[in-house]
Image 1: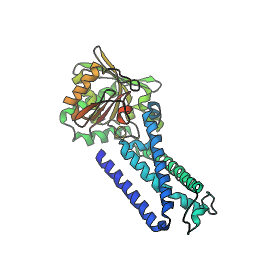
Image 2: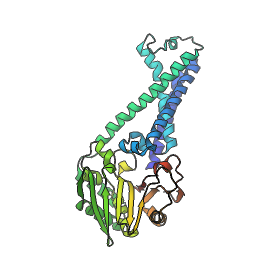
Image 3: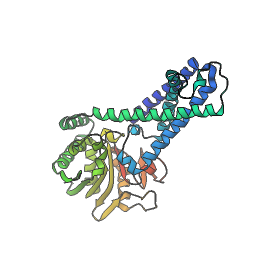
Image 4: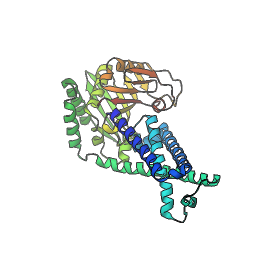
Length: 358
């Protein structure tokens, strides 16, 4: 599913670039240096958009308060390519706006001279500046619209949410896993307690192990911000396989407590599809791990964290394709040490993220 989305995005990006070149060939062929200035402005605007997005996703406080539509694709290189393509394309609005407004209202009256062969450094700077501004503004407008439109497509009925998810996954899970998932879903719902201030707790008993579950207010802050005020509905947007993963943790690793920092949220695959689980604390008997390296310090990997990583390597991969934490970044068939660098490494220094298989 992720590969299909990335492939679709690349096709769209390629189409945008082809249309940009066609536009150049049809309309500005005689003024190639103007085209070059516009492209430079678009590139700078794209880099600015990517930098602002990088700053937002790299700072946990910002990321928790607002999850935006551009986080649909997590690969930073694909994001960068998308920003560049969009920014280059929309920067061609600058000469269009100048022509529509007339009389050189943008200060680009020189663009109306068909025989123009050169420009001054000041005119170059003004044109590039406008391209950067327009591309950044267009990106913000496009994604603001997406953020408002996408959540409205979510089903309104709790019953239909659960029924649709269950029926769809019944054929995808083995009979045993399906039963364990339904038992976990039922237990967590039946034991759900409202602790006030948007905080909830519950319990899950599997294989003689009684596990307490803590859902702080911040674990569903993004959902509340998008208008989803019923915690039970938000919780039940997790897929059956996600509930089965919780059951497996309790049963196979004897986990007695889990504190969550992220469950379902409207944007940001895999969370928006009910397959993302973020965890900050796990306990087993006298073992306790807080998944936080304090922004990159050299805190040694706790024993429980090592045990969970080994569990993923041996059997957890059947249900979890990404196991991303402060000490180990595990996906596909391998784990590498979290070096605290950019992207996934830096973003997972303060929690354990699980991407559950679809």
